[in-house]
Image (cartoon, rainbow, N blue to C red; front, side):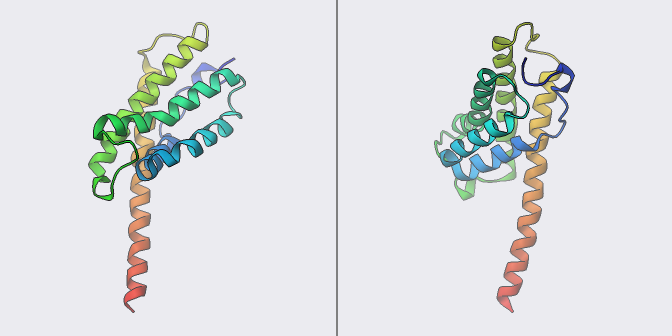
Length: 159
């Protein structure tokens, strides 16, 4: 049948946190994150997708969109250095990978699902927005948690 049983659920996630996990893990771990991300997406996708021939291409698109974004922007193959992991760079990678992921998902579905619809519509915009907001929210939570953890670590170490 397709990704979901009804088409109205396609844009249900206004904040899609799994894309944030993909962005942060690919930025930090580079190529080493691709196989675990692909396996995780396939395993979680099995609960939503009844067609394995649709699941694998969608998982490939989701897995490689962030890596491709990093490669396109920074010409790097294996993640970013610590100096390059800035909020500005994360936003840039999140935005480009959200676009690539959304367009890749829609093109895949248009090819594999009969009468899926057109590429440029409201669902595509909501996919991009959900991926982007999920990444930003997860990154901000991560920064807040990391700051709290590091502050606690350094204050205990000084005492």
